[in-house]
Image (cartoon, rainbow, N blue to C red; front, side, top):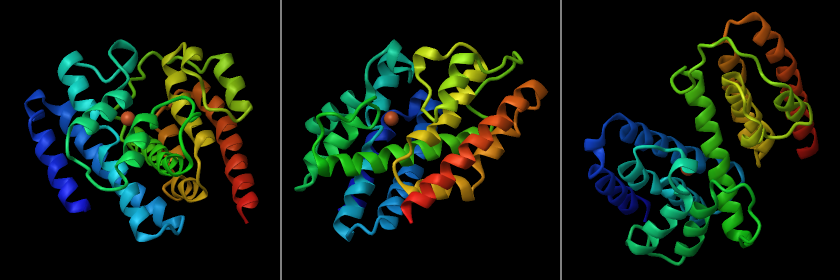
Length: 243
Ligand SMILES: [Fe+2]
């Protein structure tokens, strides 16, 4: 089931490769997210069928990205369209997945980038939450490579963003003002992680420290120190609660 779908995914994305690096980056992101979905699903002790479903949802979660980029030359949903919705439509129209789990996978794709999961059924929700964790983990990984965030203005994290982080909330896009706020947003992903195994992975890979170390601005480092303590406390509490 999975191998066939992977072949279909690779064939489909082949048609977009002429658009260059943004496409190949998205393909490699997808493959890492698929692997992460498998890891998270296994850590949750899901049965082999559901591990497969989680992998398929990971494989297709960003299927809307390719057409989005072709049409609008951007991955910014606010300047183009909702790529989760587009992915849902693309999967509906194609035969990428054709099994009894199709509806679950479609829903997981549709909701993977939504602010709220209200209205989704329980089984789709579980799979969707796995995808959302995997997606965030991979974004944090990419941030450690210093590739995606352009910070060259020595800005600091603004007050509203700091307040949200103090409350251990994921930062709202509406509160973003500075370039440093974008870094803070990604760090705050930790507060929206669903599963303890995902948090463990972030901790073991030291993604938070690795990201922070990329920005030597001493005033920003002071802000980071506080955020790091907050994140550490948050993870500790979640680990305790899970025991
Ligand atoms: Fe996405």
